[in-house]
Structure formats: structure tokens, C-alpha cells
Image (tube, rainbow over all chains, first blue to last red; front, side, top):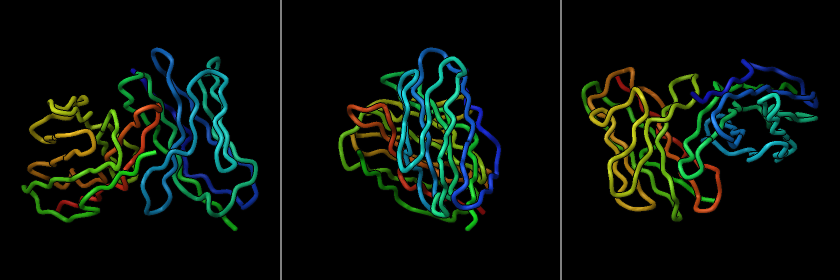
Length: 113
Length: 114
């Protein structure tokens, strides 16, 4: 079945450090890929997405590129801030018309000033 | 984008009782879903809420335990029946917009069963 494997956390970085959170997937067909973020005490928010191979999703300084050859969608940010502290979820959706999401386990990110 | 509200935001319930969670979307959407997020874990899909017909449940979830209604395009309810402490979770409603392959999530309902 479809699955998402995500880098285990927690991850702790200093402010302005470079961030990578790894995500790989297994899916039948051609999935769309997503990163969601959950800030402390808040609901889930879509951070970025990519719907086909080689697409790059970007938002708030975060980027992720859909790599079909490596079945990956790694999340990156060049310089993290304390406000980026949150839990990040990688997810996929395979069926256009029934967009149920399969989530990774989530990675808790803490940024230290 | 769609704005999704859920009621209640949290509740503490006794074992053996039932709780109905409401989900309201501010615009017409195509798909609506219910997810569960157990403490410290990822999200697991419970079911797809179908308008005017029975929900489609994922493996491990059954209608008797989690009855779902969706009477129109913008509203759905999830009932957690005959609750046990293992049902303590955050329950999230989500919806897919009319033209985009992305889901919007409600703020969640934090349920504690004692």
C-alpha cells in the first residue's frame, strides 16, 4: 500500500541553521506530495505541495522538490527561525477525485535562539 | 481556500458515553474526511464522509463505533460511540476544495476519555 517514511525526530537546531527533513514515499500511480505543519496548540496547515515530478513547492522560505527517481520530497530551509518550531508532516495523495492523505509520522523541530 | 470550524474544541467524557463532533466548512467542498491523531502520533484516516450516503471507512474503523453523517456539501458530524480511554485523541475534520488537490484542516477536537 501507499506509505510515507519520514525522518525521525526530534530535531533541534540553532537559529539561522540549515534545515533538512527527509521524506520518501511508496505509492501506486502518480501521487501529489505535501508538507503540513502543526504549530504548538494549533491545527494542521498546508505548508507546500508538488503535484508532479520535478515540481518544486515553496512557502515561507521552505522548499521541497518532487524527485520521482528517488521517490523523495525532502523539506529544506536555508536559515531557520525560532518561529519555525513545530511538527512537520510529509503526506501524499494518489487518487484524483478522492484525495485522502497518507501521512508520515511527523518530525518535531525545535529551534534554539 | 476553505475555513473549517469544529465543535467542540475539546471535551472530557466518561467511559461508555458517546460524543458527536461537528465540522462546518465556509464554502462548498468536494471531499470531507475525518482523521484521528493519537497522542504524539501521526494522523490516521478514519473515513471519507460522503454526502447523502454512508461514509467510506478505512481498515480498522467501523460504522458502529464511528458513525458519520454528511447531510450537505459543507457540514459533517463524527460520533465516537461507547468511548473507552483508548479513544482519547485529537479528531480532525478536513475538506478538499472544488478545484485544487489540497486539503484544509479544522482545528481539531481534543477528546479525553476517563
